[in-house]
Image 1 (cartoon, rainbow, N blue to C red):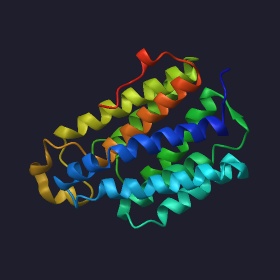
Image 2: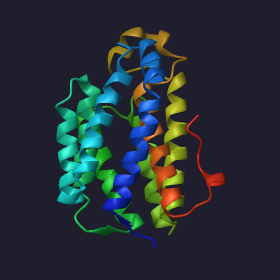
Image 3: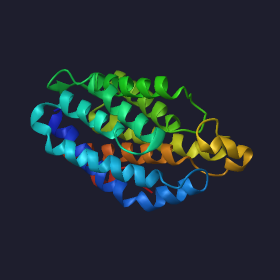
Image 4: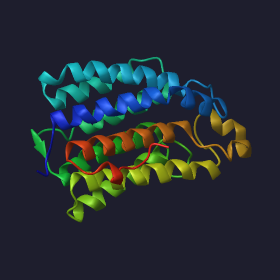
Length: 222
């Protein structure tokens, strides 16, 4: 089996919700170092929207994920809600078939991340969530072109997202409230990139379990 369907994706979202909710205090604390200290609270609202979307699986995954994107954007979470909502809106544009190949899945995620890039105006190295999202998308594309399975594809994406998030520690912020701190933001990891790294680690965890990859090969959420 090397296709992805709506049920797989709903399970991925379920795992992401559980893991992200567990990290809400950490994300708020991380955001307090360079921002308003509320990124975790925003992620908590995002997770509530995800839970609602899982219950709406019967409507088909293109509509399910599109509705999720719009619902997230309605939340009071500043730019993070808008960007994450647009991530899912973009992904939904690639969910036009009942089952996707690894390449089609990589393309769907690329659509989502390109939408975030257009909306934010940010680029790689600006100390934003894109520092996790862009490497993850690139890793997915490379893995799909190399003929890797879904567990391998999402594992590569998770590693790339985690490394990308960690790289923000030494960056000067060029977007958001953190940019006002100048060099003082150096030494702190971007909370948006961190939450996106957790998202992709969760996707990898879920896919590994669904496709029967051994737990020993899972990427850590730490």
